[in-house]
Every structure is written in structure tokens, then in C-alpha cells.
Length: 180
Image (cartoon, rainbow, N blue to C red; front, side, top):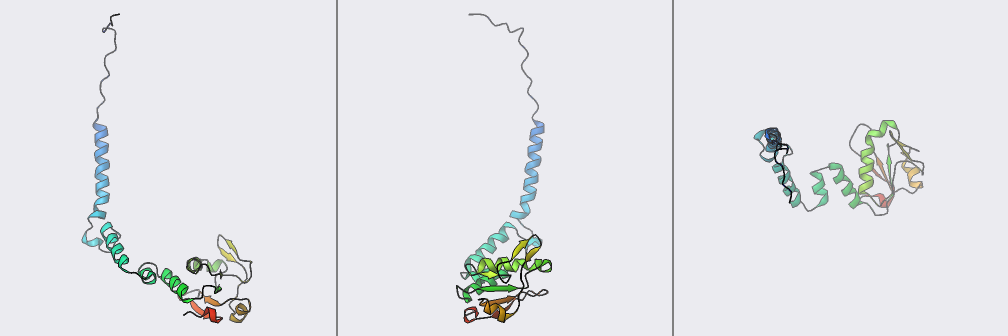
């Protein structure tokens, strides 16, 4: 068995100091605690902010409300409006939303998307005919706000979305379009 010569061997590597790693770890931990503290233990000035205890309380309050329309009234009122209209309309009613076409009405598209979601599977149109095209600035198509013309085209309900108000006007066109 050959003998190893320890005299020519390189000296053992000197361990690197660990203080930079420890310092960065401590600073990261202190930052995390500083960010999480107001969320877990909010002060009196955070009574109406979305902190973890407030969100937990809100979830408990919403869980007690069994009616989806009432629960949505406490969250997003347009959702409550859509759910209530869904309950009140015949399942096969055709709905036309007037005032939704063009660049100037782009800000009202949220109404269309919310109501289209909540009124599904009903047909919800913004253009008379099948020519509605969605662009980056909104819809283009054939506008119509005439109840008689919409009635002759098979629509049961006209929703007028005004330009400078949040109140949607409901105009029943047939018996199916009368909210119950």
C-alpha cells in the first residue's frame, strides 16, 4: 500500500465568512415581518381597509346571506342587478341593449359584459342584425332604439343604457320581456 505524502498537499480551504448570508437573511425576514404586521395586526386607522381580519369578517358576513342577489348587493351592485333581472325574465327572452355602439360608448361596455354573463343563455345584442364587430375601442354595428323596430325583429326587452347616468331603463317589448 503506497504512502501518501501530506507535505505536498494543498492546505485545506478556509471557510468563507457566513455573516453576509446571515445579514441578508435577517434583513429579508425583518422586511417580511414589517410588511405582514399591518395585515395581521391592523391598527385603528385601518378599520375600513382590506386587512386579513377585515376580510375574514367580511367573508363571515357574506356567508350568512343565503340569497345571491342580496349577497351581490354587498359586493358589486351591477352583479345584483344582473342576477335580479335574470330571475325576473323568461329564460328564452331576447334582450337588446341600446346605446352601446361607437367609440363614445366604450365606457359603457362593462354593463354589456356583466349583463350578458348574468342573462346567459338568453341572447343579448347591441346591434340590430348580425353585424356587431368588436374593436379595441368598442362595438360597431347597426344602432337601434326604436321599440317598434326591435319588436318586429323578435326582441322581447330593450335596455337603454344612458350616456351620463348609471340607471338602465327597462322597456318591455313583449310579454316575455316583462320582468316578473
